[in-house]
Length: 425
Image (cartoon, rainbow, N blue to C red; front, side, top):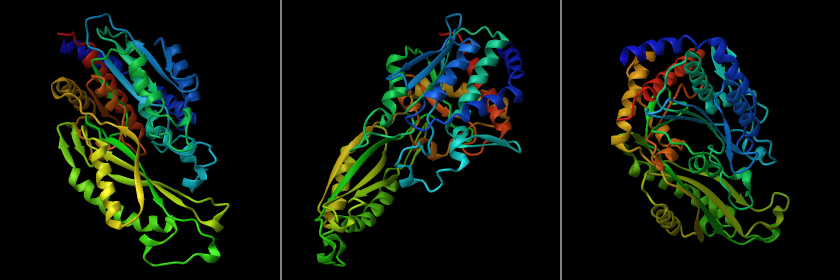
């Protein structure tokens, strides 16, 4: 078995070449696919899979936002493997509100991808269509080599991973994330995989636990007052203007966030979670009518939480912070997503196979990834939720080199051979 595996591995590796990988990465990653607008990139992946014989399907909540699911079918009786990356990227989407948060709207990094002196650049490459191209080419090489797989190899591309969430006036399909992406795919996609890989940049480390998240809206109450008659006070928590009051609340929330991070840091078998908190947005008043102030000012908090943790625990702490400041404000939860860790007994054999493949290709021992990668959100959390033991593993997170991307494609190919050539016990 091992000799057969080595022979097939060498045959597959010979088909993973620069002239195959470079155009695939650049073509796919030069298709803009900001979150909410993934259709064109999804169509490209669908057409590529169809051309290469992976019998793709579009599985989605709408014709504009769909998962692409392809499969290299095994002969039967073997373990199956799911590869997945997300189609949506961070950065400007073309919405009017982009100018609220980006100072570099026209920067090529957001809109294009290129190879310069052996290094790939562009948001699309880094997060997350570069690793997607790697596993697509790995699957193509396996198929063309005629490897006698026993188990099925699933190739998937998902929308809605980046984390936008509906709130207030920002509602509708473009703002929906997981429900249209990996979550929808696992419910409706008919995927029956024994193991899964969220193919994303991890600097070639591995983890199989992921933080959850709870989004809160804190609304500060005050009184809109006409500018000529307002009476100021340096007791900011007593100021009539709720925007000024919020400025007194922000330092208290920042101190709490630092304490929270230390209190809840946990080391799991599948990685270390350092749950962080950020005030991601603030809203108060109308820019076109500032003479009357505002009655309300809202702060929007992204709070990362440990697997199994409930958001009520965080909400209670936030209320205590607000009470201590003496500010009139209320806390509202508008998003809760649980984090998950892969079942230890189920994932351990899979991790051993990844270690073997990583060692074979990279000539180095596989390490656990940095805590930042298990403290964010990636779709393997959803796969673990639905009982498919899954990890995240991939190339350098930022400016990956061509050599790194080639080695990543080979590691993915080796993992697929290790899993899908293995008979089920």
